[in-house]
Length: 224
Image (cartoon, rainbow, N blue to C red; front, side, top):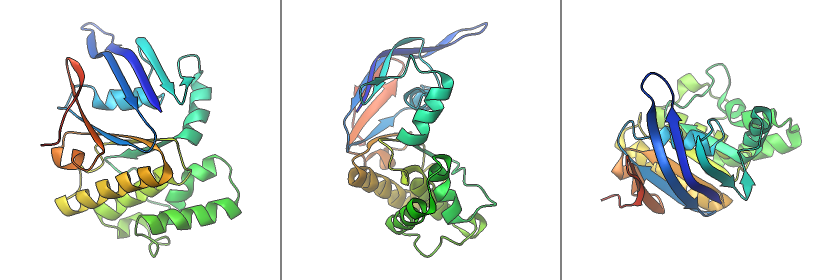
């Protein structure tokens, strides 16, 4: 469960700018929520706050009952390694590692042994339709295959929270549709809590629930 209660984030400077103003949000396990919004309204900031990569100026953020505010930066890093999977628009696949090695990274960071890593990686590659590409290098993959690799990497350690930041922005329509369906299906299969931020209504249509983020906050919306 993700719970945000009146979260505010203001960027300081000569011209302070409040990006999020008293935003509240609840997302249940097994649900993929799409958050629509124009560029600059704070979609990525919202994801970073949920992931503990940024801290709010006011309000509370709880993940499965855990208040993130008291945690140190080191504690948040350890928490993310176990509980959060992140899918980025730019893939962030390491070019010098094979597909399987990229997918295995979250488990390697947890210092899991090969008897856990190897079957988990094989299972996730099969789930995203890349069972025969584990030994391939990233340069040999299409954009859609790279994003599927990123989804497998985000989910291989079975995180409670799955966050996706514009994951279809660099894909054609067919690949984008496949990636969003895959992300939704894997969130359902693992019982994770998923939040997808996007400006694409076509992508949002595949989520279980659609919200719209604007300067006035979050509101229920539709992908139409």
